[in-house]
Image (tube, rainbow, N blue to C red; front, side, top):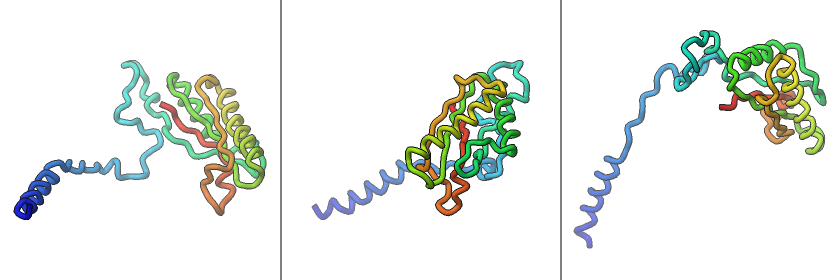
Length: 165
């Protein structure tokens, strides 16, 4: 048995080294965190040859829409971003978004879930008034369950918009 140990050690070393995959090189493009929000993923192509170049400039992410304490009033500083989102959605009729509502930890769980739902609905309704079909907009409330900050409670009073593929 002893003479087999060095042979097994060499065997497993050779087999283990042969099974390793080379680590792919990271391109400088993927290293930057400052990529424009209007960048198109590489695997996504225009749906037709006549599609205008503006259709490619659809935002992939959007900053959260923040609300005041115990409020569902859409603040004026977020209307431009939502208007741009609505324009992007109108240019891409197959695109859908999910809107999630969030609250800070103040209040009961039930109250915060309802408040989060109202916040998500306010954003959805604003997009609907801008011409986006309601069938392309889904809402969900997380209430206080997904905070962004434990100390800055105002960061938790938000609605987030995410593209669905």
